[in-house]
Length: 212
Length: 267
Image (cartoon, rainbow over all chains, first blue to last red; front, side, top):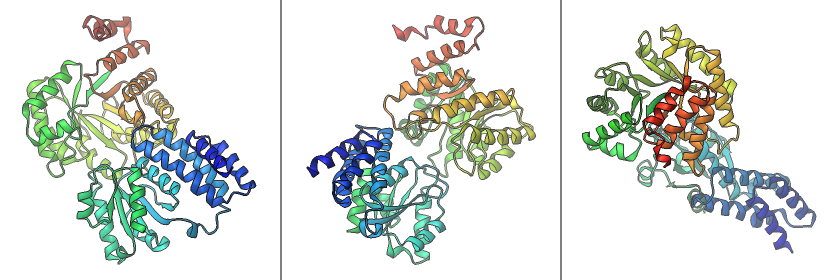
């Protein structure tokens, strides 16, 4: 009984039916299903499936966005019912595209997948200065800092930001992961980042691995 | 319709490697192919080579102009690279591109001011990328105003309203083509141009979408494109779209394309 209700939610999510996800989620709650169970067994697996399909080039950016909208419709219903969001999240991530770089499509997809995977995400947006990353670390005390650069000319701002954190003695308290076109595993190691992910899906796996 | 051949770009793998290996023959073959396919300008870009960009850009210009009688489109935000390329360029090149981002604007304006260089004016500012027609128009107005005030004839300005991916926002194509129309109407004598591939980013069958988008933009007045001129279907579509848009008297260019066998790929 529960399983079939949850499956319906997942199915609607995969089809990108935001209103249906919202209605079914509300109904499930009225039927006494634990909001956490709805999140973990309906919304989360849905977004994970979307992530895999996107990684394998079976679906496209627009497909991911419409599924994500559906996920958020469900989350919107669940959020007030899930206890303390900090307690219920698997971890807290501060994310941004580095200074001088305005690319946000990849970064936004990561934000969605992280939220889908149960992370609490603080998105600083694009063109984020090293000092602003540092301030955010002080303010939010995240488990993880994720930085993106899409240009060879802005790649250096990743290492610049890490140096800024080191200067302010903030580096040890946070794991750092990086991604974006010109980045690589070798680059990540050379600048003393904790990890590099080649795609959205790997990024989630990497993040989970690093905080556990 | 002004065609800028986009192929000699270092971020394309084959070209990046050819530049690194100083492969004269390959670069010159691409330039010749683009010119013969109908390119009016040959874009040259060495942007991935930090520190060596001026040297390589200059080298590319020399190579290209050895084999084709055609101006180049100098593709760099760095005035040092542009000046190095200008020093060897024959004829009047196009600069790709100035924008309203302060650093880029201040760096490139002195190079362009008072010259007869053609210039691509990209609708981007320090406030980020414009998403609506209004935001684009505001930037275009400042760019055109600034350039004209610095003695750049309006006929030499090619405004690029900035193409953004349809996959992230369903109104991005419409906002773009409406901007083309508004810019062409409000600033008499100015041109508009753009690259296409951004529109289809993150979607399948990109070539097809790029082509449909080009045709729609041409209908609204777009008169320049940075494309792969070896794409026969695209080139045939462009000449057809221009005729349909009422910019080809007596269908002269359309018929010429037909007689030059540009439609023969249809079989």
